[in-house]
Image (tube, rainbow, N blue to C red; front, side, top):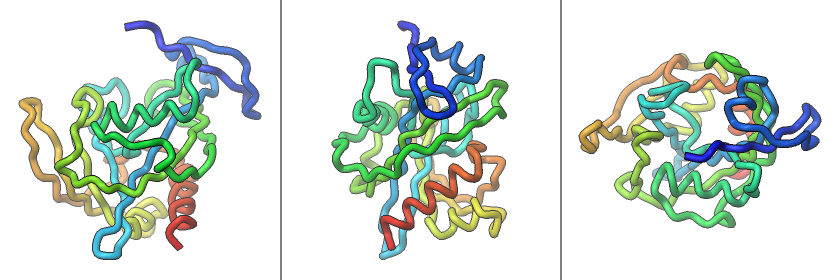
Length: 207
């Protein structure tokens, strides 16, 4: 597999050059990512989708995360990020079906490295049933839905738990049902300000 080369930025969003992905994380360099949050309308109630990260992942294995996300390579445009949805979830979605929330810069240093991202964030109103998702198992172990209002309470600290429902895929390829309450330790620790920007952006789309 060829080395992944990322475009690097300063703290003001100016391009500073390129660097290999491992070096970007080791040095804490700003770089671009693509984030796509799925929402749905179930009986008039807004829901949000989370992916369950594979247990094979090097960082944040087995935690709940953004529906689909990934790094943008140096030779890719933001539009190319739609490949993450097809690769991770097996869904064919056109870029123009996404609703942009803009660039949200944030950083995490809880996985043993400093991850400084300029996240290009989008929302997709899902039209696929869960049975239509075909997961890239080395990346994604399952998909769940939660009440959007419940997710907001969960992220804001008003609630300590969140009810999620969906499925996980076993090592043998079988799907098993997820229907449980989760706590914050089971969610990838993106900055609370990042989560709230996403929540408020979705709310502005579905007033």
